[in-house]
Amino acid sequence: MNIEKSTEIPEELKGEYERTQHLVLGFVQWIQFCMMDTARDPNFSKNHILSFLHQDIIETLFGVLSHVMEGIHNPSVRESRYLLELSIKVAFIQSQNYSSSIEEKLSEFDREIKAPSISPMKRIDLIYLKEHTRVEFLQEVGRLYGAASSFVHVSPKSIEYRQNRVSEGRIMGKESKEDLKNLNDLLQSIFAASLVFLSHSVPQYVIGDWHVDSTGELKNWYYIKSKYIAEIDSTLDYKAERKEILNQVIKDRSLGIQF
Image (tube, rainbow, N blue to C red):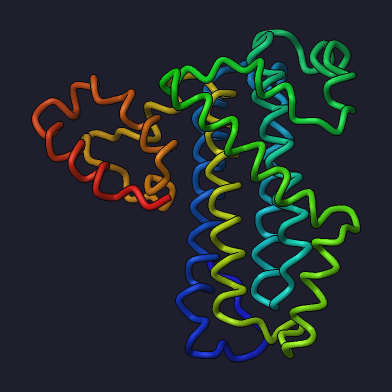
């Protein structure tokens, strides 16, 4: 699936626009698989808030893609901040009491849901990450959330950003390659972090089914380039499907890390 730009894409921007497509569609592919696989649990729609909030995630992702394709950057950052906050709160709520009903969850965690804070991330047991990686990851998430937050409320940084773009003729739809590259770099880090949190909100078998199919080979997926997602993948190297090709999988995964 592709979303087309309303005007012709300049040649120098085509590579970055293609990357935006991969960023969004790779996330959508993951969330759709997780919904189908997790729904094998007959209680899924009764006790998992992702059973309906996945629609918010997909809507946000396609909203970001539509904006980026038209050169609208700041709303894309604001939407991505929402996605990160939502992913953290979904993971936190589900990890606290997975089997309680949705109604019980919404009542019990009313305060955490309402609070404009991502501090609950510190109470999530990030089982797929090594202990030292967890510290680094949470620091990175704090940085990403702060960077995106500077575009949610009026700030000197957001004003200066717009002033510089306008003064250089880089108005909406006239973005430079560097503008789009910087945006994509931020989006891919936020989206990867969101996927890490959401991976901790679903049953472990779902993560195993997603990362390792009958061939055992490394999944051809954009986010396997993330060092955090790659670390999640590495926790599945025990699977029988990888026994004969494990050395190659480890090599490919290591060489493929880009962010």
